[in-house]
Length: 181
Ligand SMILES: [Zn+2]
Image (cartoon, rainbow, N blue to C red):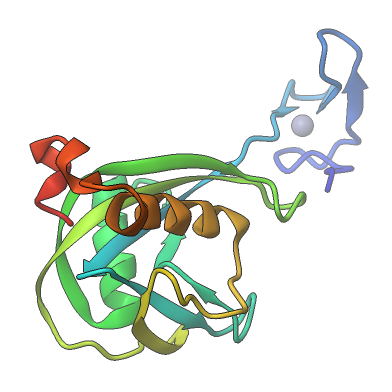
C-alpha cells in the first residue's frame, strides 16, 4: 500500500528515481516514505514437550499461534513480550534469550520481523484474554491443523528437533537456553 498524499503537509507525493528502490517523497516538505517492516514479538512457553498456543480472535480468527503481538512505539521489546503474553494467556513469565528471528512475508501488505523469546512461567492462571479464544498447551508432534503463521511452524519444528528428534538434543543447548526447556 502506498501513500498518495503527504501525511505531514497533504502535498501530492512523487516517486524518487534515485537509488535501487523507488520511494515516494514529498517535493513540498521533503518527507520520504520509507516502507519498513514492523516488529513482532512472541514468547515460547514450554511444559515438557508441549508448547503454549492461543486460538486467535480478530485477525486470523480461529487459527492458532504462539502468543505474540506488535511492539508499540516507545515500548521496550522485552516488556512488550511479557505484556502480550499476559494479555493473551493470563500468565506472567521471566523472559529468557532469543530463540529465533524470522522475517514474516505471509501478509505482503503488513510485513514484520518476528522475534521469538524463551519464557519461564513465574505466575498467573492460564485463561484466554480478550484477543484470544482459547489458550492451551499442545504437544509439538500434534499441533492444531490451522496454524496462523508459517514462521511459527518453523519455530515448532526447531523446538521439536531439540526436544524430540535429536538424541540428547537438550545437551547441545548452552546453559542460557537449557533452563527454559
Ligand atoms: Zn509534505
